[in-house]
Length: 88
Image (tube, rainbow, N blue to C red):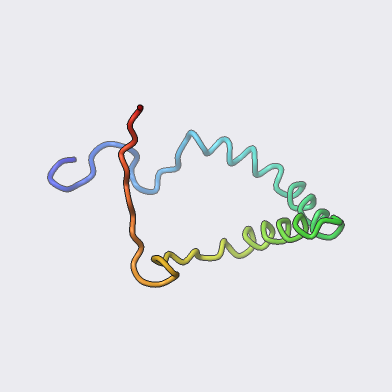
């Protein structure tokens, strides 16, 4: 890094070519995938499967719900502990 600024890599806003093609292929199956999720949501005998399908549909329609980060006991700051792993 040169004097606190980014050097190299993609310019901000430039699409990632490695994932662009995968996204395009996946996008072709979106209508069928959504129909499958709706079918599971409406017709599955498993409550867990119906809830999971409904959640996936809502996540795609409205975005995933934010995840709260809280410390121990659900309050205060988050503590991050990094431990060094050693082989035997």
